[in-house]
Image (cartoon, rainbow, N blue to C red; front, side, top):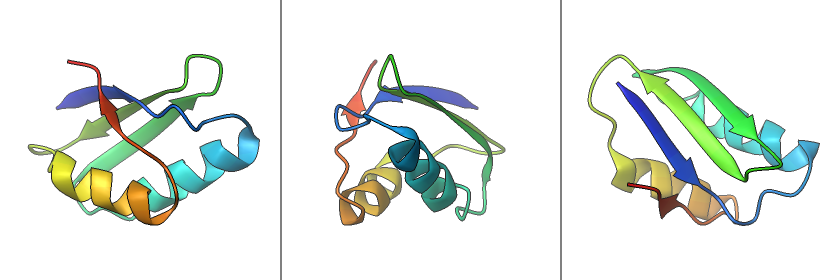
Length: 69
């Protein structure tokens, strides 16, 4: 499953590293790719992604998930 969403607070490499390391701890997530310029996150998971869980994990780090679709 491939999901792309926006995180308006992404502004630098530290943001990218924080988001990637936070989401890579989720068991079903196979890869995370952050585009700093587009402020987008692409997640590839082996099963349906629990976006409530993703939103909560990133919220704890100070980031807001804006669902693209």
